[in-house]
Image 1 (cartoon, rainbow, N blue to C red):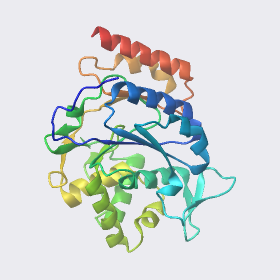
Image 2 (cartoon, rainbow, N blue to C red):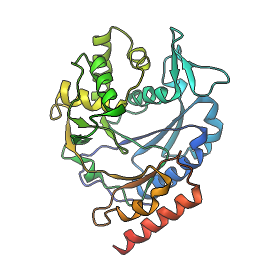
Image 3 (spheres, rainbow, N blue to C red):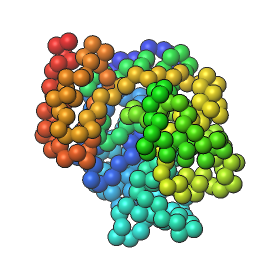
Length: 296
């Protein structure tokens, strides 16, 4: 366990937030073990799951980890369709996909903690080295993942347009991509974002967001922070560095290992949970990476 004290005595604990569900339980177990090993205990970890998955996830609860039901943080007028695990309905009987519900859940993260700094951890992330707060904070500012020139086509461009619609901005490509694992938000900005959406759309933010055909919560927050608040005014600093090394396709394992920069190692790795890579192979990859890190 890493018990290193924060570098700055004024630093407040981060809220660590994971949205998960039954199919990702084994991966989430591994994530929790890595959090317990590498992340200071002062940073509380909250896992949000559908209510019916609570019994499965409850054994992961501890003094530094809380398990919460999705239904406890979203309005009561959102309900899951019996027998259809991936579909919900809102108050207007509008169908909302499970993937979209995860976006709404992350956008409700301000209800989970009073901590100003929020760090999102996907279930298929695993920390590989002690948590370094200096890679997320500079003085009183928080890292905003921002990659200029990327995310200008395909579904990422659609996410730009959805963000523009919700924020009352002209539909366009906003110049950068804001989507990455280990994304960090400021709680006060998240509250302001949702108030802004309601002011622009005249609808509860959950309804306005949930009825989008496609959206990225990370793109939405990034565009709001840069083009409505301003990055400096929003208490962020922009950074394009990847803090999580990712494997998106199962056949790319050799490339995944060879492209990792061990001199400036990331904080974590992500092995996409739906690529069919068995857990013992994931474990072997991570062991190899940790061995290389120890030798570097």
